[in-house]
Image (cartoon, rainbow, N blue to C red):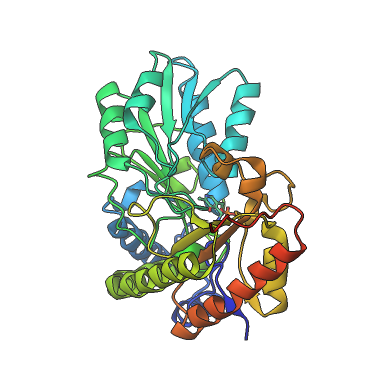
Length: 389
Ligand code: PMP
């Protein structure tokens, strides 16, 4: 078996989730829109699942909209809000380190008459709420800042940003995909109006996402049809995946505190071990305001891709950055925004732990990585050993 340390890019579906989904493919196949008994049963299950997921983020049942995934939720939030509020204003604020889907949606909106400001982050990847506030104009209709960064794991001061948006009467969207199941989410306390969630990120099936929409916020729908999801997202509900996500939430609610403790232990051992064992290695992201499962490093004088492939040969799966951007040769926009040079950003390694990791996985990584880095450095014309004198 491979050692898998890339939980940020994909998670295995929890076997208990698969079991809970099974009946909804055949025995309980009803469509909640049908008025007969089979349809009624499906409606009851749909309501229960919606309630379960709402409770997970301290929302209300009818504030949960099911989508096909986080990418769709982000599209629905940003484009739906922008189209609805065109008359009010055309200015949107995001941060420089948002997920690529948010950046590309922002580009689409720019091509369609909106203006987008990108707030910089500090060297640890945090947005400064004051700097964000300075960018607000009377045309600002939306602020979109991710709860935590999917690459470097830095957690944002979401509540402070939410308070600013509330005072200024601006809608606040937060993509919480990287944070869900790792830190508690509380839409009311944090003044979040729109929030993106994904099923797979809490060990549920792929192909299902959620958009939380606070009551009172209006969006234009992007998917038009039979009017499901309160007219905001048409199409027959994907019941097996909805049941799966609700089960994933149920499991997460029960075991999150213990799981987070375990992940923190693994993360801290990885950070300590790597920084101690490998000279000229550095931690990217924030030391404290950091997701409990994320360890992200930069090594002088090596290429992240070469590191990934060498570890792959040893049966260890790691990432150099977001899987969603892995097809481009450009360095990660997140790392560049921290102030790293291109060659520094290229020498990065992202390790993300999850539910099914064992102590052994951490030990194996710490045993293999120093040798791999040393070997790559020997071959690298870029590498200059630190002067020890
Ligand atoms: N937002 C964040 C923060 C992500 O990490 C991802 C990728 N897992 C997405 C959105 C897009 O998710 P998906 O590809 O499942 O639509």
